[in-house]
Image 1 (spheres, rainbow, N blue to C red):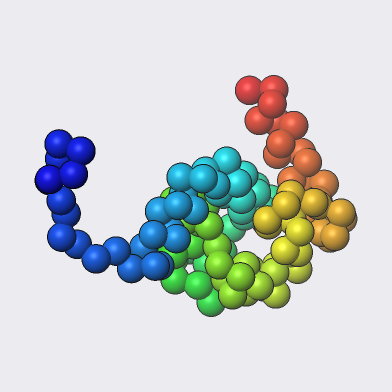
Image 2: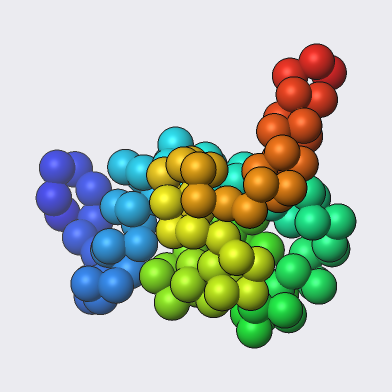
Length: 117
């Protein structure tokens, strides 16, 4: 027993630990990335399935990105950038300056509509 509790005899992989720490310490960033992905998809008028498949991502994997459960890894983010002419700055940092004008305006309109609701 440690500190009054049972000792767990379970090995935790470095990947499991990194994912757990990432979710705990980076929750706001994961949520912000998820929100930007959702806005982008809605601005393009696509379903999650269409959006994921066009970027050659598994739909369930993409769903985890958009719902904030997981943050896209670099490979997945690049696939989204290539499929939809996005930028890593937009996905990870929220900088829309490199997005195509029409997409940036559509996202801005969606954000404005949400603020009114």
